[in-house]
Image (cartoon, rainbow, N blue to C red; front, top):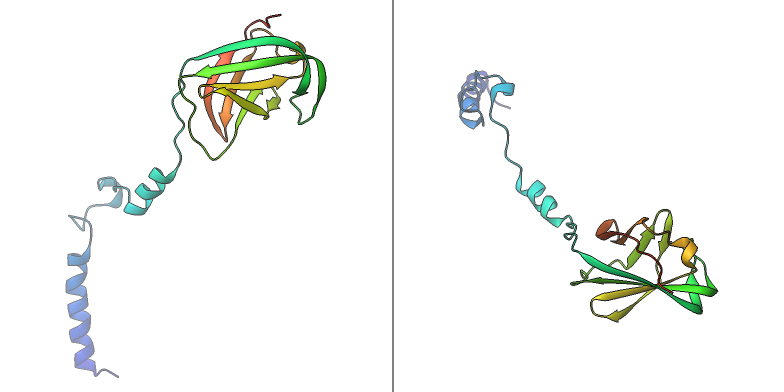
Length: 156
C-alpha cells in the first residue's frame, strides 16, 4: 500500500497528465463546438464491406407468346401453361452476384430463368395476363435492382 506522501505525488502527476491526453485542442471548449469526428477505421471498413447496387443500365425487353410450355405463375408455382410467354431481357452485362436474379412484376416474383446468351435472361411466364402492358417491372439480385423497365406488348 502506498504511503500518504507518495499518493499525493501520484495524484498530482495524474492530474497534470490528463489535459495532455485530451483529444480536444482547448479543454475549456464545449463538446458541441468541437469539429466533427472523422469516421474510425472500423466504420470505414464496414462502409466498404456493404455491397453496392450496380448502376441501372438500359435494357431491351421482348415478350413473345410461345404456346404450350412449363411456366411460372409468379407465386412460386410452376406448371404446364397453354399460353406461356417468353420474357427476354437483354442488358449489356449482368452483374456477378451470389444471389440469383428475380423478375418482379408488381407483387409477382419469377425465379426460374435461363441464359439465352451471356447478355439475355429468359423467364417463362404463365400467360400474358400476368404481364400487363405498361406495368413496371424489375430484375433484382437479392435486394438490389439491376434493371427497371415498363413491360411492352406481348407479341403473338
